[in-house]
Amino acid sequence: MQTKIIKVGTGHTDLTEAADVIRGGGLVAFPTETVYGLGADACNPQAAKKIYTAKGRPSDNPLIVHIAQWNDLFAVAGEVPAEAKRLADAFWPGPLTMVMKKNERIPRETTGGLDTVAVRMPNHPAALALICQSGCPIAAPSANTSGRPSPTEAAHVAADLAGKIPVILDGGPVGIGIESTIIDLTEETPVILRPGYITKEMLSQTLLREVAIDSAVIAPESGKIPKAPGMKYRHYAPRAEMIVVSGEMQKVVAKINELTDKNHANGRKTGVIATDETKQFYRADQIESIGAREDEDAIARHLYRILRDFDTGDVQIIYSESFATPRIGQAIMNRLLKAAGNHEIFVS
Image (cartoon, rainbow, N blue to C red; front, side, top):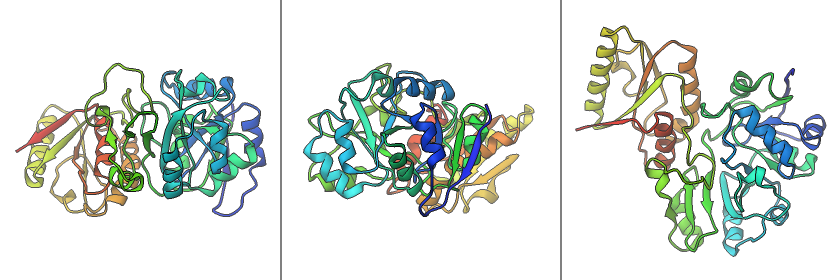
């Protein structure tokens, strides 16, 4: 299969060709404000299966359904809690996914066998136009090979999926760089299943009550069926082994250099994910700055690109500083630790 790349701008775009592919049961990769998604008709079970096949994704890992307007929600959800409207008014279109009971229109192939459906309204003109022109809700996980760093540029999509899907819409680099926050509204207390740009504090303030965080967000997951993407399997991982080193910064630098020297003595090339403030202190073979430590939006935006940059080199092990920033640090660390397979060293 030859993959066609179509440039899309920020204004009105004619996406007739891509919409025809979606309606015909095919796959289209498209930009959102978070990461690039791999889209198919959410109501078509065979199309959903194509997503799992193209990505090499486990079939019990549910897909997020993307809609373009509030009323579309009633076409996919069997029950729409009152709190969903509050959240939508505050954060849609935007990087928030809500989990609720599905209706019969959405097949289990889309929901990973669950009776719930995860829904969001992306804040990107090309994504919204594709949904509208396709005339159906679009199921879309990140447009990468399963387990690899999520794509924040069309070139990342092509590196993983060229020859496997017919169309990639190239909207340039994304704005946020990490996936949407996922909140489960089917429980008595709303529960965050995946942290993201929309924080626990923002959700609690909007709902005027406490929001819980699923234990899988802060600890290695159990063997239970995942209720949302990214809860069960290793994600976002570069090809090299990766370890996160946490603690006081001067001691982190010393520990990473100690580990780097040991690896060099054994003939292993190393990489380091640093910041603008610390990059000059390291002795690794490949050193990548994720940005200034106080600019947490830039850290989130650059994370997946940097993980992919290491794949173009020949390092065998990557050490990363910890990025527990004040606002979205939990979301950043969630992705970083999953990329490292929860391998973290604490120095004191």
